[in-house]
Amino acid sequence: MYENKLNKIELEKMVMMVKTTFVKYIEKNLNLLKISSPLFLDQEIGLNDHLTGDGKPVLFHYKKSNFEIIQSLAKWKRQEIKNLEFSIGEGLWTNMKAIRTGETSLSPYHSLYVEQFDWEKRISQKDRTVEYLKNTVKQIYESIKSTLNEVQELYPFLTYKIPNEITFITTEELYKMYPKLGSKERENKFAKESKAFFLLGIGHKLSHNKPHDDRAPDYDDWNLNGDLILYNKIHDNAMELSSMGIRVDAKALKLQNKIASNDKSYDYHIDIENENLPFTIGGGIGQSRLVLFILEKYHIGEFQRSFWPKEVKEQMAVLGITLK
Figure 1 (cartoon, helix red, strand yellow):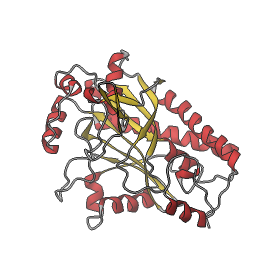
Figure 2 (tube, helix red, strand yellow):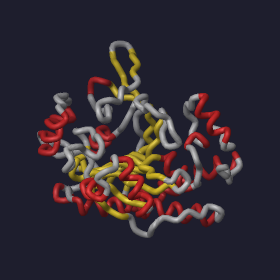
Figure 3 (tube, one colour):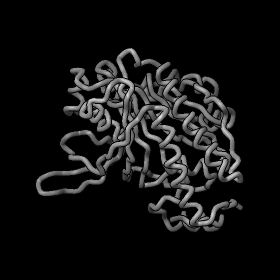
Figure 4 (cartoon, helix red, strand yellow):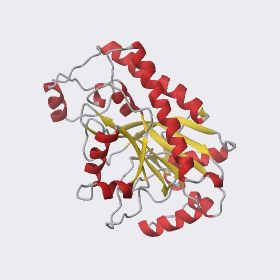
């Protein structure tokens, strides 16, 4: 049976400690400033992400306007980098809270309610390289390691270790290693071997004429993005902790919109085409998944207050786990 190592009050304190400790390191390592962010956006401005197109946002109406509950802040953050006049090398982070009704399968990692450390950083055009992306990933990974170490110093019964360095691999390289496996099975296989890796280049079709996974065409450059994935020892599988990337320029936006048959155009897209938005890199880091990993918990519902179906609660109860 799964061993629940923290009592209820200790768990609440530890959840807050993990979050505040990680923020301390990510602010320093990436040179980020905390700002507030919206819970909803006007539907007409087109800054709320519909993810890969199948994510239907929650709508509500006020007077003559339609508003969407946030699903992702990728586009909004880039706009804020411009509005707040950040210099190159400076950035922002925010507590993104979202509702994603497109989650078809609630699991130990997935919820209708999403909390992320959402961040965005201004870069120069010459920084739009794989090397810059890798260096940023290393800074985030260092923040995770530092947080893990600090928490374990206070709670020595938490003993899980991660490698000193993160491994980098492209989606094509991963496919060629395990051509007979599906994309998620490939991730699971490599996670068990590497324990921590960053999967580069998600969106374009690979040599077998299929993409590793779908990505929205209008925020990340598919050649300059990826997922930070950790091996979860409790579930013996890969856990995506962060999706991030260097944002599209005019050329990448045009190509990816064509591939995705995306003909929607808002001021955001026009500004990219006319180079009126700064070059940026950004992403989201799952707060509940980070806590789950560092505190060696089984299910994010042990500390995240969301909705869990009756059958899920019953399954967890058999393991001695009570979901919020």
